[in-house]
Image (cartoon, rainbow, N blue to C red; front, side, top):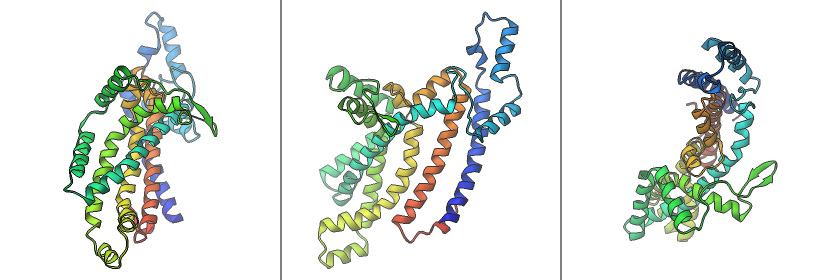
Length: 325
């Protein structure tokens, strides 16, 4: 296992390097932040001084090599707008995004697996057909539209939940969290549900497909013949086997929740990394944009590694040494 982990970390380093180059190149060509950062009334001398101070007077390859050298030391640059280290800005917003993504993933798993198993065990029932219809809506409806409709219904018309913000927070192990108070949970509920809908639909379909496949396997028939109770068959034999593809997909989808929470955070004004990225794009704050995307790539690589390890634990037939892809 140690050899496998070392090999994957080396692959991860190569992936992060190439992705950082692509990200830096893309951000370099999308626009000139000087037009936003420097006043139109500034004279040419002040303009050149400001450009040199930001390091934007150097050619592309010099800027990238300078970024790469600092990145190897843990410095992803300093924000043009906030005049703070970009990495520090992102880490300050990361707990809010992680809390939202974890809560959304928890909703998808806790609701999706039982609903999918029910639909797989009783595929012809009205409840199963209703569940599958709901999963189609979860795939089809745009996240921003669902978020706006939820705000209109639960915040404006019914007044049950707050529409924006994070609410009251408390500190746990140095991290600001909102799920420890009722006010924080009320603020968290709508954006988490909105973010979880697509993943919930995905988990339902995976669980249903896995249940329908596993329930007809020989070992399930033998368990029934031996007199094993139905609950034990479902909770032990069926659930364990359908969890293999579910864990694999959910692990990778968690990275998607973090990376693509941008829409939900923008709609609900949730103070996470996604909203910081949108604000930075609007202001062409290159260091923050590059730092955010680099961190997201690194996060995907780490999640992929963890998923591979969990896969081998759930299915002993799989050996990490064989998973070279």
